Length: 395
Image (cartoon, rainbow, N blue to C red; front, side, top):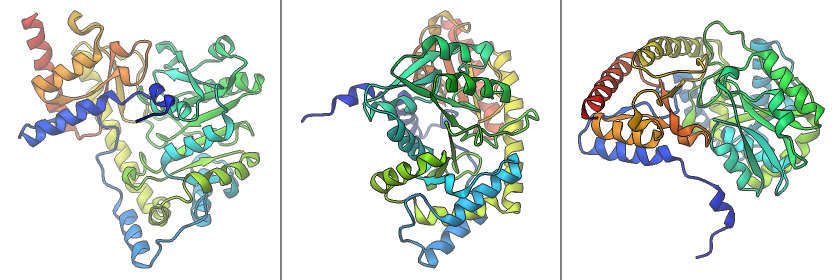
C-alpha cells in the first residue's frame, strides 16, 4: 500500500523499543526500574480527579468551543498574573489537546511547505516531526554545553536562511533540564525579531524549576511570540491530554479555524477538571511535589557524577539529567543505544538513549528521568554501579 513520503522524515522514538522490552521483562517477573519515562510518578491531585468525576456526573460531556472553556482561559490568565505578574488577555489563550496540539496549531498556522524553523540539537524530537507532517523542515542547530544547550543570537545570525520562519526553544528543556536565563531569552528574541521572524517558547516544564530561580514567562515579549504550556508536567495530568498556548491577537482567528478542523474541541471533562488546578490547596500540594523532585535531583546528580558520568549542563528544572557517557568506557563511547539496551538486559534498568534527542552528539549521551522516589533511585544507582564494574571486568 502507498504511504505518504513525509513518513520517511518522521523517525520513531527509539526509547519505545526499550520500553517494550522492559515491559516484556516485567511480564516475565523481572523487577525493572524505569528512569526512561518522561512523566511524573505522582497521580493527578485528588481535587482535580474529583472535579473530573463531577463533570461527568453532571453531563459535561458535550463539545466546548474550539479554543476551550472561557472560564478555564480566565483561570489561566489569573495564574499568569499571580505567578508571573503578567497580564494576559483571556482571549489570547487557546486550550489544546496537550502541548502537542498547541504545536500542531502553531506550525500549521505559520509554516508553509519547505519553510524551516530553527530547532535545538539536543531537543524534543517530535518538534521536527510536527514540521515534517506539514512538509516543512526543522533545522537542527548543534548547541553548546557552555550555553546550556540553548540556541544563541549568534547561531540565529549564522543559520538564518531565506526559508527560515523562526525558532522554537524550550525552558526548562527536554532532555537537559537546563533553564534559560531571562536575559538569554530576551536577547534571542531580539535576534529573531531583527530577522522579522517568530519565536516559539515551550514552557511546559514551568513550575518545575529549582535552585531558587525566579519564574518568568515570555507571554508578553511581543506580537511575534507564541508560548506553549501544558497541564501534563507540573499539574500531573499527562493522561488527560490538555494543554494551552498564548498567542498574539492577530493569530487567534486563524488558530480558531484550524482548531475547528483539526480537533473540533479540547477534551471537555478534562477542561472542567483543570479548573481546580489553580485552587490554593492544589497549588500547595503541587509545590510539595516540586520540592520532592528537587530532592531527587539533589540525590541523583552527585551519584551519577561520582560514577564517572559527565553532566556538562547542570539541570535546574524539569525532571531530567542529560549525561555524557563517552568517558565511561570505550566500548560505549559512540553508542548510547547499545549502552541503554545492554544496561536494560543485564541490570533491568531502563534509561533513554541520547539519539532520541539529537543527531550531533546523541550517541554520547543518555537521559535519566528522576520520576521515581529516592529509594528507587538509590537502587538504580546500585545497579548502574554494578553494571559499570562488570563491564570494566569483562573488557
